[in-house]
Amino acid sequence: MADLVLYDWETWGLAPRGYDAAYLMVQSIWDVDLMHRLEREFLDEFSTPSGCVGLLVACAEMLNHIEASQLDPQHARNVEAIARRGLARYDAARYTGSAAQGV
Image (cartoon, rainbow, N blue to C red; front, side, top):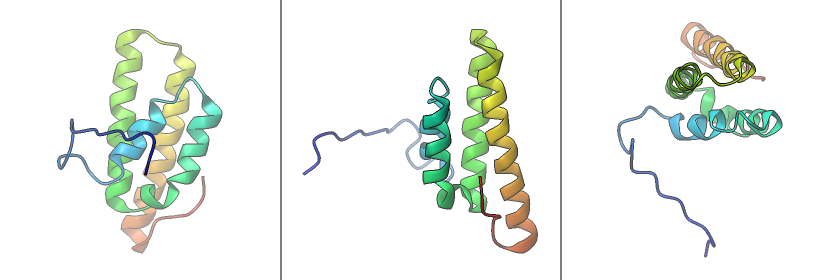
């Protein structure tokens, strides 16, 4: 039995596949190594068309938060880089039927 269980009902059934993993990842902007590790760990999830959309939604929300809160612009650059990789995977999935691999 798990020692810790987290339930997130905020977007349950409403968000695209991959959103929860992407939200966790972009919330880790203060620890870039962790953020990149989460991106690698959830690559299969983010490599589906709907997973790419979930990733892009989470990135857009975080970029809005960074701008509204006037956080360090480096955080925005990190999230933008993840979004660019997500867009590349999305385009690859649309044109080839499967997403490009790699981070």
